[in-house]
Length: 279
Ligand code: C2E
Ligand code: CA
Ligand code: CA
Ligand code: CA
Image (cartoon, rainbow, N blue to C red; front, side):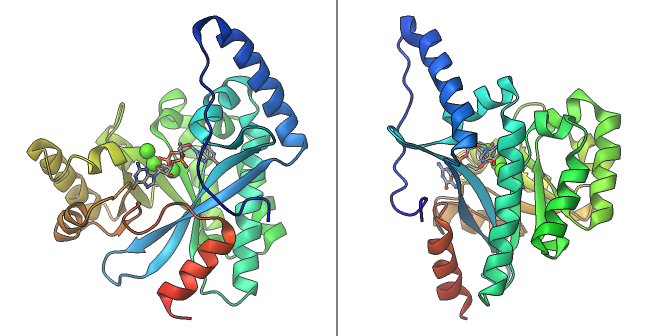
């Protein structure tokens, strides 16, 4: 398939006077990319820290640029957000993730949950619930397998609107995850006010837990609080055994990170799941 193979990224590196041109070129290319189906998804395993089994994955967007090769989301998502192109791109990602999940189940793989990132712009568009409902119907997946990852920026721009959209989504049976917790404006109030099922502790944070005692204290408190509120905690960007040990000792529920696996092309993820979950 188009998305298999190396995961080495190429980068847009605009020089000062070339920046405007580069941005225009990038925007044009991004527009065409939607029509030309140049996007694909890679899947990063999520591991349950109690059972040691793979219980899910996160779908991460990749752009196969015809000249530049695989382009990382950090290189184009900000512009996609700005131009509104994230709406069709995000809709494609949601559809593709559910189609792939259904295909895996049909192949006899053990069902695992699939997490899809939802951008603020996409969330605000208003018809997100309708899109989610359609995608679940079309793909025929168990809605409980779908987890939507939302960031705090979504909650800040329209708190009341966000609650009602989230409550509608919950009625479909999908899970809601608060992504990148520990960065930016993180507020514990979000956890009580919104119907989240899961909280993801940001990588920048996980990175420091064994070297910085303040980060460690905060991480421990977040996990304890989340537990009391009935939320599952997922640590992202776990790279070392020491980080894993600390998280496990403090009751974190799940992890994802290079320690277990980088994001994988669909075929590689299926193989990884077979090999590790023993089917
Ligand atoms: P994110 O949602 O926080 O996703 C986790 C990022 O951390 C991914 O980067 C993943 O490859 C990377 N990562 C995972 N484990 C490790 C680790 O152990 N060490 C290090 N250094 N990195 C690790 P990626 O795939 O480049 O995605 C970057 C961001 O782009 C995502 O951050 C997310 O905000 C955004 N993104 C990706 N796909 C989508 C999408 O379909 N829609 C939207 N709206 N945003 C997306
Ligand atoms: Ca995410
Ligand atoms: Ca994240
Ligand atoms: Ca992050």
